[in-house]
Image (cartoon, rainbow, N blue to C red; front, side, top):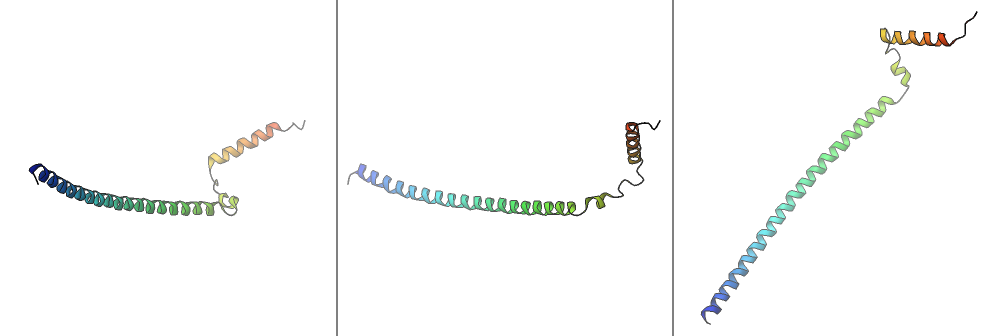
Length: 103
């Protein structure tokens, strides 16, 4: 075998070994990348599931607050409120202004 053939064989052998090592390194890198992506996806999914549960609970609490007799819930909330008393007075005046005179 002449010198050129030996050099070509050497380069082909080592190039193949280099390509194998490179391929394995890339496979490991891709595998690690996929694992970190999966961890990231799992973390995001867990966070979303938690947020959905919080939203469901908030909605349930909100619905239960609106259940029942709404009038009984607000009865007395304007007791001794001077602004509300003024609203009532103005409403009475408006209604009386619309009534015909008894004369």
